[in-house]
Amino acid sequence: MIIKIVTLSLVAVFYICYFAKLISQKKQGIKTDQLGKGKEGFVKFIEVALKLITYLLPVIQIISIVFCSGTAHIVLQFTGIVITMFGVLAFIVSVTQMKENWRAGVQKEEKTNLVTTGIYSISRNPAF
Image (cartoon, rainbow, N blue to C red; front, top):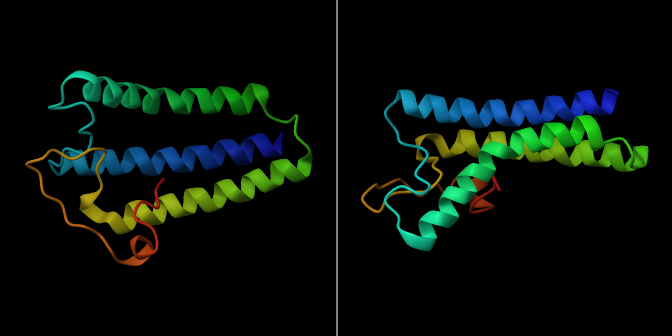
């Protein structure tokens, strides 16, 4: 039971960071979510599908944790929690260091700065 609580907590921290950043930028007039906008055909289909999956994923993850976890050996479960903790930490650092340049898709006419410092000096897209 403690494994499920810790895992759900880590998922919650990840999504709180994700949606807090979206809301913060929206309040500043920054259009963060550009997936599918201004696109046509197959590219629009792929980007809209990606957006739908992004919004369904938290529900799928929660259902998986609540109903399908706990069958693996405790060492594997603990290893998974440690890896998840590092992943959530890397995501928070990357979103924080990206500042106001963080987007999900960018319009051609919109210019953002290329971030090459901090965690972005190591990886081009550490959030993923």
